[in-house]
Amino acid sequence: MKFSLRFSALLICLFGGLIGVSDDVPIAPLLPIEHTTWGKVYILEAEQLEVVVSPEEGAVVSLKHRIAGDFIYSPLRIEPTPKVTTEASLTGNWENRAWRTSEGRQVVMLSRSVGPPLSLRIVHLIEVNATGTTFSQRTRITGTGPGDHSLLGPSFEVGLSPSPDTSLVNDAYSLRYGDIGTTWQSTWSIESPERPIESSLNVDETRKGNLLSGHPTSELALPPQGWTLLCTVNMTWSNLPADRSPEASSL
Image 1 (cartoon, rainbow, N blue to C red):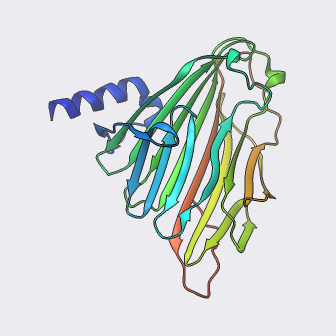
Image 2: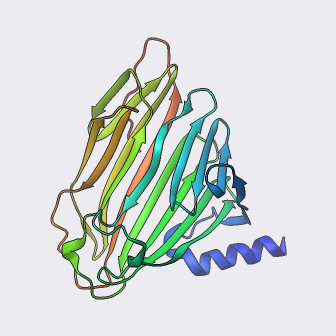
């Protein structure tokens, strides 16, 4: 009990701004394991959903349903810009830690710094709810110093396994895998200074399935530093009647 209390207090002190202050508090750490493909990973398991998070990749690399199989064929990536891809622009590896909360959520936090010319801090907060019906990732990109905003091109993308039954309605993308329906949604906002921004959700067919992506469409108009951009990606799944297609849900 003392260990759990100390762990909870540490996370709230370090990351209270991200995890929020509520009755649902961290109670125990989750430990990484060795994976034959991805090296050291965190595996979040709840009911029929399994999520594999790779600190080396800095991303969710597998999102699997025990009946429907893997929902994704490529990692879920939320990036500050596609123009900065070299290791020289990054300082250090992805810092990582994971925990279980008092209400049964499982959470992984990955964080990394990007040096000049961008000068950013990137934090991924990846969660699976207690019942395993909802997966979410919230990524905060924060300007830590004067940077070249012309290089920014924030976006997310994930390769979704092929489905014969899909629909894109009201900025929500739904797919059916047998009797399992999934719905994906994403939003972008500027937290500091607080301001809503418009964004797009796009689907492109590939040889492996469907590439889902999104990015802000509004002008960012960020201050020189001290700003925070938030991207939220949610996926829910449910059992469907044999004659019903998946419908977009409001998360």
